[in-house]
Image (cartoon, rainbow, N blue to C red; front, side):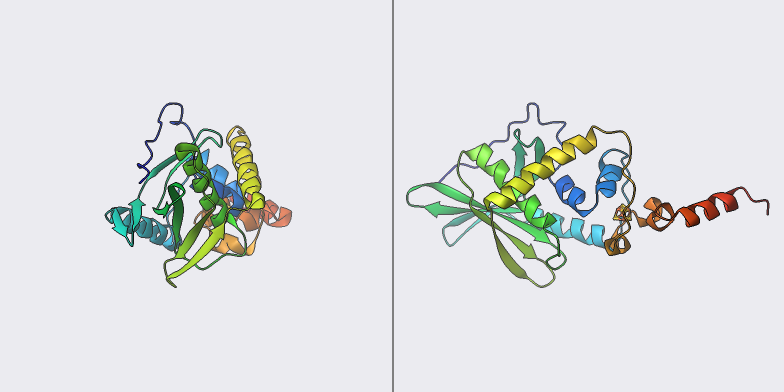
Length: 218
Ligand code: SF4
């Protein structure tokens, strides 16, 4: 069996987490507020997600049907300049060579319309490839509520999107100005909604009215 990877820590200390890629694809402004301004607000979605991840990470590593299961495996890619912790990696035996890692990411909700979860999973695969020197062709997303496991192939298009997103993330982290809000139905689920105020900042009229009221005598 392939030994579990040893994570090189040198030079990786300042890398942003893999989850920032997911954040960036959800909303650039939210990613900036989290990673540059250090603003974090919990809501039911973030708390449930954190608890789900904790439960998976707390389970013991095991061997099931000849497959080794590793949980909470530290990950790093010096090429993408990101770090993370996997929820679960199955090491699938291969008679022609070393075990093939198969990362599994746990998500609370159902499959979303956009592919930010797939990009986050693909970034884990790129980390494993760099750390172990093997090809990781596929992984899976496990939807906790429905208990549905969905396989994801790491196609050239998904790999390119993951690399492009990592580049965008580093460019965003180097800026000092928060991107403006873009009002979208998903703002309603966003834990930063009250601080971001997208309805106010995207409407000139609402902004002027609020600014006037701010200095009005009672
Ligand atoms: S409320 Fe909307 S625009 Fe603001 S950070 Fe959240 S998703 Fe982005």
